[in-house]
Image (cartoon, rainbow, N blue to C red; front, side, top):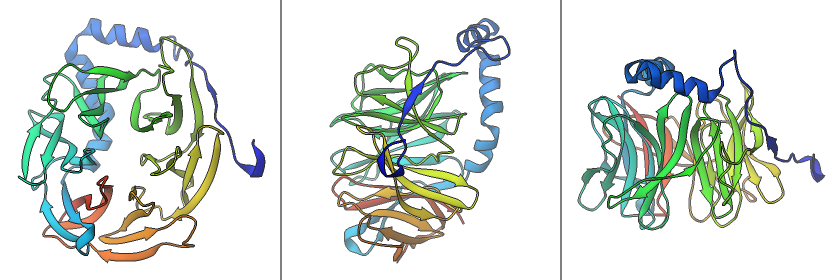
Length: 322
């Protein structure tokens, strides 16, 4: 425990064998039994998530023009989610299951309303895309139980390389120059990897941050800190900040338990939806959520995930189909 009641990160040791089978032995056994068995286990693990995730679309709004609709990015039955803008704000990355049942990373070109499949994998699924530098993007590659790590590749095409190797299957992540904050998929906990540490099977430890964490992780604009949702109980969810250099965790604002997704604007506003009503909160200034606008678009139901472009102009949201 640090000063002022804030908590600190602490080392995470590699997992012990579970039921006599280590992660490495589990992987070897799956490989020995063949890809059909591996894919069956993955599907079974994902069934609850997939059942909840279908029939959602992505919409693009203009924050500089009264939060008005620009494009309906997707319009189909299926999974289209996890939007993230490129660094130049000209395009939108997202994950989609439209190609042969595989989940790939797509690029939506805003000016042309054109679509490009960036991964087009035959065997693996990719999720959680983010811009990584000017011309690259990162994503979670589902390599089979229990491996699920972060990779990156050029947007224009080319070889991929692993940028995070972890004992813990990575579900979601956020990064800045100081390192990577990631959410352990089956642990519902956050872990921290300092930049350049290459923490994982090769080098040993990650840093445990907190348990009972939500999926919405962000690098806070204009700082070295990160934000996350701490689900302290079923009725007490709080967006908090983490300063990795000190380990300080600070509450920012409480949220309802009906939506855990939020996003940051470049000038430091937190945006979040309540149904299709857009709310905003300015840490350090506001004491509670302020109403901003009502998002209106054909077929748009309740809004969940969101992302704001680096230039502050566009808001991408994921909404249930009506």
